[in-house]
Length: 454
Image (cartoon, rainbow, N blue to C red):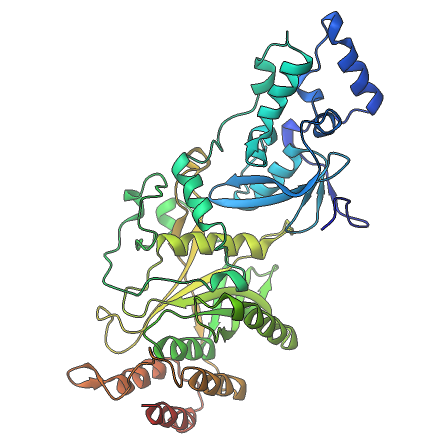
């Protein structure tokens, strides 16, 4: 990516109450030359263009960054002092305009961006470069001009939060990024959200968190959800095949008029969680499948094979990243559904997997260093008329993929004293049966393939 803006970019000028004034080159020179007579270049007059002209900063790709509520945004500094957001290519006239835009994506209630205190150039806050400029060109300046209106809400989001961000900055969940290594499941005791407090890098990211209800945080669920039974069947099948955690994506449609999110298709990722090289190919295949079916990416799922189907702290951050990415540069609201499937947790009721749809609400702005709040999503499950051929084909592809896997579930073994693993998967999938009962005969062929793998 070069240092010049792309052709016909979208320029965003809204910077809230803090947008810096744009000065002509002559005005900037006049303000600097007047320093000997006691005149001061005001805080609003010090722009990125001023810092560029005086050599305190240099144009470059990816040199600007914002860290807000656990989210990272990266920008390019252009030759004319404007900022290009790497994610979308949008052009912003000032740090405040960019900061306000990014923060509103995470927290729509945010009214201003505190740009100079929020945006970092090569890891250092821009306000510090402003201070350096004043020391150099206005040594008699009142340094309170620098900090006026620049709050410290993003002050590293607490040192522990920045440490966590640095640790996790390469694990943002695009299709290519969700495919990351995870620890083997073990018994984990969920904690209540209210006990978490401020982010702490020393806290185990696999800590499970109980879900809150929207009503418990004085909110209404901002969208309705309908999920196809074929989605649940394919997802549940995928999660049953291996003792390792799996991940997949959800395709569907979002109706802005009815505020209804319809989930119509599951797309299992046939790749190992630690295999980043294969992740890009998986992403491309799923994108093509979505396009061919006229669907949009509306969510994701993953499994907790032997543990409760509740989100971990890592899952909460991943879900929040998904919500942000699906919204993208579109100012309109679009939800992203997360689903956790727990197939082999012995705390489940009977043989059926526990399936947990969830969403994450950003923490209150005055507690920006807290974790996002995981909330339960009420879902309507829609029974399909029949098992479609593409779902059946996807099931056979999964069987083939895990054929030689060392962590393939041994379906002839017993899950409990009177129930084999095969009985277990059959019983769980029967909960997602279509109306056409002929599906059971079709699935018997799939089950026979699983037995032949042993």
